[in-house]
Image (tube, rainbow, N blue to C red; front, side, top):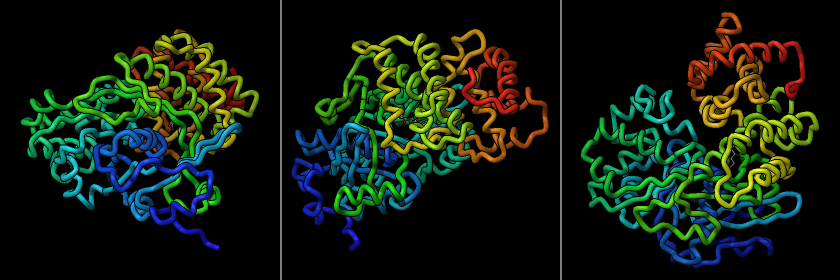
Amino acid sequence: MSLQRLSADTLGDLHGRVLRPDYTRSRVTPGVLHLGVGAFHRAHQAVYTDTALAEASDWGIVGVSLRSARVAEQLNPQYCLFSVLSEDSAQQELRVIGSILQVLVAPQQPASVNAAFRDPAIRVVTLTVTEAGYCLGADGQSLDSGLPGIQADLAQPDRPGTAIGLLASGLKQRLDAGGAPLTVISCDNLAHNSRKLRAALVDYLARVWPDVLPWLDEQVRFPCSMVDRIVPAQSEAGLARQAQLLGVRDEAAVATEPFSQWIIERDFATAVPDWEAAGALYVDDIAPFEAMKLRLLNASHSAIAMLGLLAGRETVAEVMADAELRAFVESLMSLELLPGLAAPPGFDLPDYREQLLARFSNPCLQHRCAQIAMDSTEKLRQRWLPTLADQRGDSLLVRALAAWCYLVMDTSVEIKDPRLGALLEVRASDQPARARLAALLDSLSMESALRQRCLPMLEAHCADLKSGSPPARE
Ligand code: CS2
């Protein structure tokens, strides 16, 4: 028998142990606007907000998709209800989340998106638009106004296609509607994420609507935030399994791990939902939290992805189950990534490392190495370059970097990256190895002294990999 679809009308059909919203959903009104309603948002901020709704009902989320209508088609017919399955080998929880009220598709519904920005009841804007969505230049801190998406938006700022263009036009709308204060929080994996967002926005606004800037200075705050939860892309098999566990079909189902963390800089222009009730932490100095996460968790993740792909392993858990690869990851963490970090207050880095090893080994997560390897030119400069800059000689991290270079040059590997064109040019080039590697390091915007230092070591590692040595050889 085919299962009914999850919706307000089928909540009663859910299997008994499924948790559901413990507030009156019909009373919930919009308070948060979120850009980029992907699986990560649904498994993270939407869950924190769902918990906060038990305290105050005026914090519902209006989601905005920047491009495709896919998520709107998944969620809107379900009254935006969806389920989050969190599990590892010791525990399993299945919870229906009701915090999202509506999903708008920006290119199709520009007037509704504008209306949301104009609405003073919306007090918070959050974003998960991926690292590449910030349209930053080689310095990693300011707008790359040469990007085709930004060029198109600058030419037609009322019909924006990028997150920066959309947010800028939303802020302009808000100012025109009276200029109620706003808190804008980036939830992407970038150090100083909201500060970079603000810098890109200010640059963009200065070119298009400079009159917005004084108001932005006074009434809009951009607290940085560090988000952490491993949320693999959903698969058909995952959807089918989750439907069996729920008792109804959920096209927007997400599967994740039990662990979740959200650290937010205490710098708000408005009230915010009571995310602390769900475990978020508001701090005055977020830098050590960001560094710990990017330079330990995400840096290891990218290394696992590269070594795993080279060794023919599909998922992170498979890499961690391979003794040789695991030993490489453990040494990389203890000997190279951890020593350069300062523990945030109340944190113990060796404990954090142990916890990460257990999270990476979670056999319930089908977290594909290929998913993590996506957008590497954006990710690696955040995750690896600060540690590489602190190193002197050859290292495991250089080996991991060589693995990435090797994969880019391997014609059988599919690349998904915002700098795809540049990477494919290197792949096709018949220049000597050193020149090709140098071009790859340029795509990471690696600073030139570091690049000169890394090149000979990288060349040796790539030759070694080519000769068939196992990727994790130390
Ligand atoms: C991963 C992250 O895909 C990736 O690049 O490293 O998405 C990672 O799973 C999250 O940052 C965990 O919080």
